[in-house]
Length: 379
Image (tube, rainbow, N blue to C red; front, side):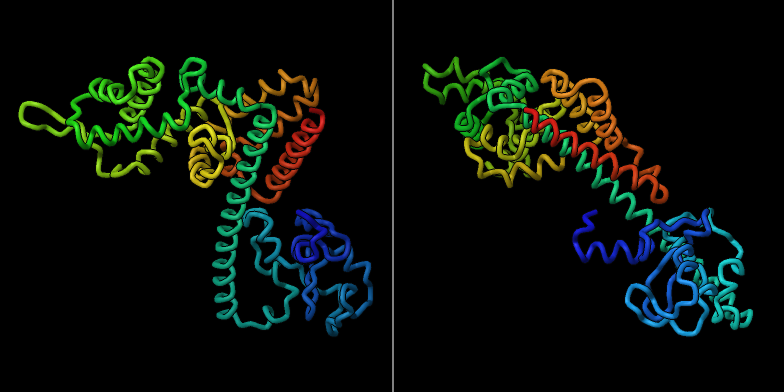
């Protein structure tokens, strides 16, 4: 959290920590119980309240908080309920509210209404906090993965990326088709299926090669075979019986080149990421289209494919690169891997409770980011 930002600092200091000393509020230590001043609404710890002594105005803005003796102001239990689980706080309503004059003056019937409302709001606050924690931890995990991927990309040039991609796809070096060839083959597939009564996978491959100049057939054949098999593997086609024969047709969900292209790009990227081959949207755009401007098409595909499994695969690739470049040794490497592995923990959000997990996650995220920046400077 950037406390240099006045808006962020104001929120952080006013609601999550003591407005006077910045100490985090705690239930276990009475000195750090939150106490909210009337009128101005600033919240300070019990220790700072005691230091104020007989003052009648808030030290933050000099706003008077009335005639209530400062040592009689009640603990702000609703705020503690946002930090702690209900089971960690006292269940005795008198213990929570004995200093609240408005509550004391209620008759028994109205107190019961108050208790019911408090329970309802308490349950809501717990749900909201849990959802917020899970969302925060998911964002932190995603940031950890992006740090890992960014580190990998920093140490790979274009040729290394292409070599890694060919290995990931099971192609020999130099067999990944150039962007123009990919586009041509995909458009040939659509044309032949619509117009030529293709009966099988092998028939489709043969027909595509007949549309290519004879001198290029041997060179392009591995690309044709790979692309056709990839599309059959993702079930882009359906078999339509015609008398004693059958004809392969495009499924209704793939009516044009753009839809076929999207599933083709997605499968290529998915296969590569499963192998641990990571690239930016710009790099994928160059390899698949020949230019960088299709990054907006590629990025959503990458985001959709980022999973806990892909994160673990990325960590393995991360370790290989860190070890091979010799950027870190001994404890540095152990710390770096510890940060990334913590952020990739699939049970992190499930086990989220209170602020301790959030603080640990922030520390690990900061450590991973600092390590990554440090190693980049060394290269």
